[in-house]
Every structure is written in structure tokens, then in C-alpha cells.
Length: 470
Ligand code: CTP
Image 1 (tube, rainbow, N blue to C red):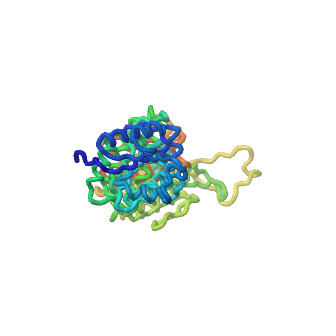
Image 2 (cartoon, rainbow, N blue to C red):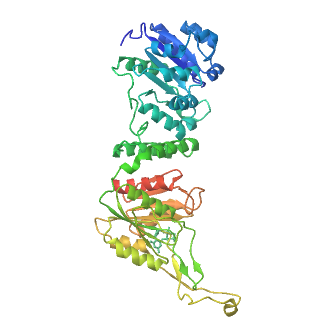
Image 3 (spheres, rainbow, N blue to C red):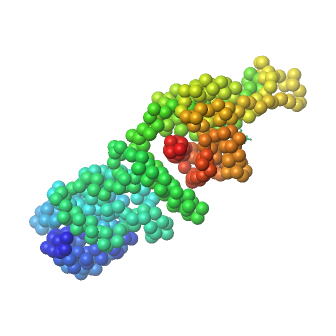
């Protein structure tokens, strides 16, 4: 590939990003290797680099304004420029310019030239911005689209950002940019859809069949590092999570639970004091319903036994409604024998009134004090743990307020579960009602894995993946 740049016409586009200083080195390097370099910058780029420096380095006039007199060449100069070059690279490319490129908004000379590039001329884009902007779904949508139409995306690197945060968004170093330019110039094709696709990480193709390996990449690797980092760097954990959620966007294509029947309990139970009053808890059912939905999407046949909740039944799921712990016990026992996996996410009442009053208790009859005698309910999970066959997996949830992990292990042992998902009521994004949960998974091989706060959907994915691994 030596000297392959000699005599090549290269357009270097620069947009408004702190990384623009690196493009000056890129221009110098290209010129050093014999290329004829034309630089086009956006007005925002001028806030970071000067026209004078770039003109000196490129030895050519720098173009900024679309309609400035100096660039007019008797008509459509942008068309001529784009047709005359051998390759165009935009580095750094801001989120704004990405958006314009993906939508054909040619209000800068840079986007006008890039949009006018004929198909046989390669366009390389090196996005660089803060992680939040890079991970924003709008940016990702634009990148995905550009990737699909054959623009070569040079993925941003992870590391320290000018904002002070750490994450994906850095413009790669000069040698990486140079390698991309040379490799693309040596390719036979100019537009190469999916060229920079890296499974799990930069997989922009929503229609791609996601393999088990992709899930490993998406879930396991980031989560392990999140786990390590969460204590001292909350920001990173959030970023990794956003990324993970994006990586899971095509999860419904995976069917690693195909052929399995999964029984899930969800929601609270209500234990009647009389015909109008009951004892219950704050469970919303969101965790159990998320598990049911994801298990179904992953190919399982799902039976969902739910206490009273106001959530719609996810499509394709058999739902059995119950009210009391007793009814939940009966329904679960009826279904358990046909299931491969049982996940008990319900917050079952531990006690129920011994003699619920028929009708409505009257104050005039009860007086100042009301004593309701309670008796313990059947422990459904314990019964499953005792009754389970060799081929059945039983998973419990442990909701704790103190010594979570220690109590979780005790509960797991006492109820003979294969796996226990511990959550706490003491953390903000954990336990009942919210859309997120903070879980630790305890496995029967004695290992435990803690996760940062995640949506209940993401928690469900992780839980189901871990069950299948065992
Ligand atoms: N569970 C059950 N039947 C019950 C009580 C609980 O199946 N009668 C299940 C829950 O669905 C959950 C697990 O047991 O999977 C643990 O529930 P949790 O409320 O955390 O613990 P308890 O066993 O009720 O113990 P404690 O309230 O003392 O923590």
C-alpha cells in the first residue's frame, strides 16, 4: 500500500468538534504522502481550527461558505469538487453533520459536496462527540442509515472525553484514520454497506439475526466491567447500559428459549379481611410481566399467574388471574408439572386473615379496636423447590431490606431454588413499582453477580440468559 496516496485527490471535511485539532495532522500526513488535499470545513469547525493553518498544511484554499465568491467556478462548484476527488473523509464528524448527511440537508458546503459524491467515490466518516450524543438514538439511527447505504463509518473510540467523562466518542488516532483511507482506497468497491460492523458493539443492522455470541458481547462483557466500575464511576455504568439496551434492540430474533415452557408468578396477592377490605403489598407486577414478555420473545411458551395488577397481558401469553395467596398456590401447582422453568416474581402475602368476615365489618359493631388474626400462607416457592423434578429449574426472588445478599443466600437454600434474584427496598431504582430494578443473581454453584440499576426488561434478559446458561 506504499505511496498509494500519491497523486490522489482527497477531500478532508472537518466539522465543529474539539477533535478538529487532530484533522490538521491528518491533512499534513496526507500531503506528506503525496495526496492533493482539499479541505472543506463547516462554520462551527472554524471555532476550533483556523483556515490559515489548514491552507498552509493543505497548500490549497479552504472552503467554508457555500456561496463565497472565491469558490465559485462558473456554476456548480460543489458538483465539480465531488466528482474530481478519489475519496472524501469527514473527520471529526459532529452529530449535526451526521444528521444532515443522513437526511440530505445540504446547508453547508461540506454536506453539499458529500451528498453530491458519485457512488464510485468512497465516503468515510469518523464521528466524534460526547458519549451521550453518540449514544443518542437519533445519532445511532443516522449512523445506521449511513452505514447501510455504504458510507464507511470509522467508529469512535472509547476513552477520556473533553467533557471530563469517559466513554465512546473519541476521534481515533491519526494512524487509524490513515489505515482506513488506505484500506478503502485499495478496495474494489467504493460504497461498502456494513463495512465497519462489529458484532455486539457497532451492529447497526436491526434486522441481523442476533447470535448467542452477540448477546455475550452485549450483556456479559459490558456488565462485568460496569459491575467493577459502578462503585466509583456511575456515569460509565449508565453509558454502558444505554449501549446494552441498544444492542438488544433486535433481541426478538433470538429464540434460545424455544421449546421451553416457563411458569411465572407476578404481582401482589390480596388477603381479604372482609368483603371490601384486604391486606396486600405495593407490588406492581412489572417485574413478572417483563419476564413473561421477554421469555415469550425469546421463544418460550409462557404461563403467567398474576395477582391483581393493572397491566395489559403481553401478546402470546397464557395469563391466569388470581387474588389470594391460596388461589395463587393452587394455580401454580396445577401448571407446574408441565413447565421446564418456574420463576416466582410475585410478592405473595405471607399471612392471611384466619376468618375473613362475610359482608362488611361495621364500625358500630367492631368498636375502637379491630384485631385481625392472621395465619401463614403456603410458601409456593418452597413447595416448588421440594417438588421439582431433576429437569425443572426453580427461580425465586428475594426482596430484602437488610443484609440482602446474606439473606438471599439463606432464602435460596431454605427454599431449595436453583437461582435467586435478590433485590432491595433500600435503593432508589429497586424493588416494587418502578420501571427499574437493581438485582444480584445468586446461582446454585455458589457464584453471585450484581448488576447496576437497569430497566426491568434488561433485568429480565439477564435473568433468562443466566437460567439458560446453567
Ligand atoms: N414466595 C412464595 N410464597 C409465599 C411467599 C413467598 O412463593 N407464600 C416466594 C416469592 O414469590 C419469592 C420468594 O418466595 O420468589 C421470596 O419472597 P420474599 O417475600 O422475599 O420472602 P419470604 O419468603 O416471604 O420471607 P421474608 O418475608 O421473611 O423475607
